[in-house]
Image 1 (tube, rainbow over the protein chains, first blue to last red):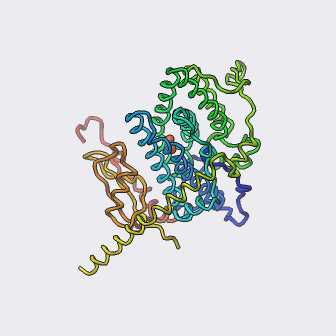
Image 2: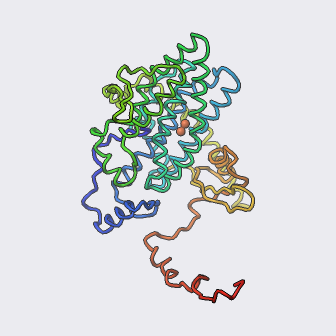
Image 3: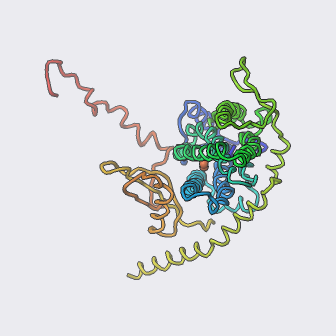
Length: 327
Length: 94
Ligand SMILES: [Fe+2]
Ligand SMILES: [Fe+2]
């Protein structure tokens, strides 16, 4: 979800040493963790580098839709909370970049890939945040979906990724709760506020379901990722879980999930839900999201405008180390 | 060649009496900024009372492919453990 996993092939090259490969497969099957200096097939390294860096990019770009509301938060309390949440997302991005770097790709390469538009990030962040209720809906639904995806990743087979996920998951639950609290306040407020809350749910519901990625039958690498314990549950399994826990939460708010096909299926013990517009999903993946261009422009500007700080810090370090050598 | 700032490994002492424990890494041009970044990145919720940062390049690690040579010699030295020795039940405090 925070990753789009649309690469063509994660096939193991036939040039891999079969003994090493067999030993690796056995370790992973026994739920052992793989650490940076351990031998691993190139396809495993590639898949993880892509997944972890996309996840990192999503945390970083994910600061933009919410950062946009920090100065307009309706109270000092809400502002302090939103600031802390956005700062956490920066932290998540940093944990994840560090984890990805242990696989041999530099931070600089990853950031360049993001800024040049080569790297992907979660489609959800290419939708605009139009009203304050959107900040509620994001915390509740987007962070909710993120938690659903990240909890099983705490046991993903690559040690540094799993450890980063443990830290992230500890921090996420406040994100979801503060969002739901905003929704509660809006839903119990004036008629206009309730309308805003319903409108935010209407706009964020389907994009949130898309966060879990393409349906399993169009997710050709899921089997490989499950076998390598990179992934622990399939896209459709996680999406169903999310629907099952979120629908009653919408009910508690007195809001309506914008899906006429939604209904409890007694036989399955799950909610049935309507068809997702996958055309929309793929077009956002291709970079056609409503605010995709603004997002990337904001990232590049932040990077360029911060250049003097990076240069000054480097110059200071350089000068200081020369002084120490001289002493 | 990357122009990234050097990488530093971050260690936190969660509370007095415990050892510092590795938590992750940060990029920084010098030790002072490394400490500040480590503070902002890894201790936003009172995770610790003390921080260490060490340049990643200064850490010397054993090679996992030498695991056997490194660690197996300890495997057959069971006499290093107290349970190796049988002492009669009626002998106390030993
Ligand atoms: Fe996050
Ligand atoms: Fe979050």
